[in-house]
Image (tube, rainbow, N blue to C red):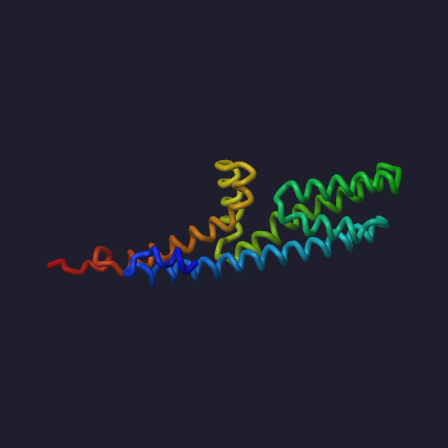
Length: 179
């Protein structure tokens, strides 16, 4: 870090250090929010599966909750594991449908409430902006885009705020020097 900082011109060091510090704070908030989402989902899946009488509720529920850190794949692997286990345990369509319903509700809970509220609001993005960022980055960059959508959006938001503040303090905006 010191070597990279030494490459920044002296007149820009304070500004760059301030920007990077703010990005660090926002990304830390993102990470804390994501961990909170994972913990809530782990508790939800383990509890809901236990209420359905699923023998492997704790390990499968906790695994699924923690695996949602990997968008789509984590949820998909957890769902597949739970459905196969439910089929072996219950041996009926009713048991498999109960487990599928638990995962359906969990996906809705995560997608429309937990991630927008616990992650988006922590990094300063509205729930609509979170959904838009995920869709836009996913469309532009595929799976990797979905992985980096929220952290990249957080950094872009910090840059936007700084650019806006600089413009509002500029001579152009304030009209300084006009007759």
